[in-house]
Length: 442
Ligand code: AMP
Image 1 (cartoon, rainbow, N blue to C red):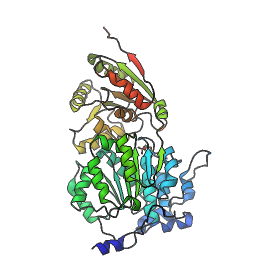
Image 2 (cartoon, rainbow, N blue to C red):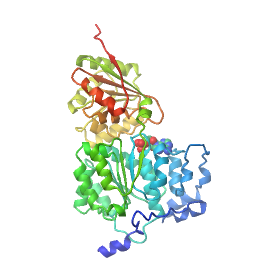
Image 3 (spheres, rainbow, N blue to C red):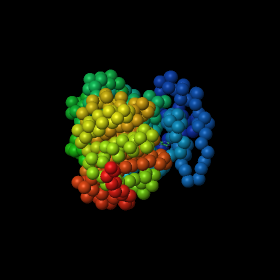
Image 4 (cartoon, rainbow, N blue to C red):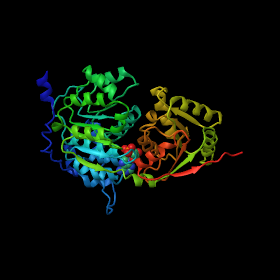
C-alpha cells in the first residue's frame, strides 16, 4: 500500500533549499499546466488567451501578468475582476511561487486569501500528479479558525480553480459530516480547507491522509491561539511531511509571542512580510469612542443606524445573550437585522451571511467568534456595543469596514466599567482614538 502511494506521489518538492523552478508560461505553454478534462481544456485554452486580459502597465503596480502564472489561473483572476496585485500579493507571490515558506502579517481585506491560493494552485498546476492517486491524499491544506472563514476561503479557491481540474473540499465543523466523508471517499481531493477540530477528526480516522501534503496554510493563527485550537493544529501539523519537505505559509493579523514561536517552529527559512500598515487601516476608518452609560447605548445605537440611512452595519457584542437581546430590540424597532453567534446553526449562519451580502439584511449583530472572517465588502459602520476584552479583537472588528480603499466608520461604546481598556486598545492599534462624552439627554 505504501509503495502504491509512493508511486502515485508527484515529483518530490525536495528540500526547500532546492526550490522547484517555475515553469515558463506563455501562450503556447498553457497546455503544460496539467491534465484537464476536455471541457475545461476547451474553455480554458481555446476560448481564452492572455490577449483577452488587457491590463496596462502602471509604475509601482504589479500585474498578475508579470508573475508567470498558468493561463488557467490568470483566466480565473480576470473573471474575478482583479487587475493588479494587492500589496500582500505583490510582496509574497514572487517568493511563495518559488516554494518559499512565508510568515505574513496581514489582516482580512488585504487580499491575503488570493495571495496564498494563487501560489498553491499555480504550483499544483505546474507540477501535476503523475499517474494514479488515492482519493483522500490532499496536496494542499488550508486551516482556518472558523467555519465562516473556511467557507469563504473555499469559495475563493473554487473561483480560482474554476478552469482547472483541481478539486476543493471543505472539512468544517457544524456541517454535514457524512457529506464531507463521502467526498473524501469518492473524489480526488487536491485542496482541503478546514477548521482544526473537524480536520483532526477525519485525519485520526484516516478518512483524510495528510502525509503527502505539499503545502500547508495556517490562516489567522492568532485567532487559532485565542480560540484554543493550537493543540489541535499541532497534532495536524505533525501528520504532514516535515517542514523541509512541505511549503508552509502562516498568516496572522497580530504576532503575540506564542505565535512568533510557532511560526518559527513550523516554517523553514521563511520570507517574512508585513502588510498591515495599521496606520493605513486606521486612516480608512473614522474611529470614535462614545463614553456612555448603559442606558444610553440602545437609543444612541438606534439613532446611529437611522442617521446612517440603514446602510450595512455590523454590531459586535461580547456575549451571546447580548447579541440575542440586541437582535430582538432591533427587530422590534423594525430594523432589518439578523444575528451571528455560536447559538445559531451553521446552515442559518451561512444563509444569514449571504443575505447580508446581497443586502436583504442590513444590520448584523455578532459575537467575535461568529463575526470572525466575515468577508463582506462595503460595510459602512461597525459598532462595538461592548468593547472587546481582547484588544486584538478590536483590530479584527473594525477591520470589517474601510476595506479596499473605501472609507469606513467605527463607533465604540465605552462605559465606566470597561473604559479602562481604551489605552490598551490604542496601544494595539498604535494610534489614539477620538473620544466623545455623551451627555444624558432629557
Ligand atoms: P481577503 O483579504 O483575502 O479577505 O480579500 C479581501 C477582498 O479583496 C476579497 O473580496 C477578494 O476577492 C478581494 N481581492 C483580493 N485580491 C484582489 C486584487 N488583486 N484586486 C482586487 N480585489 C482583490
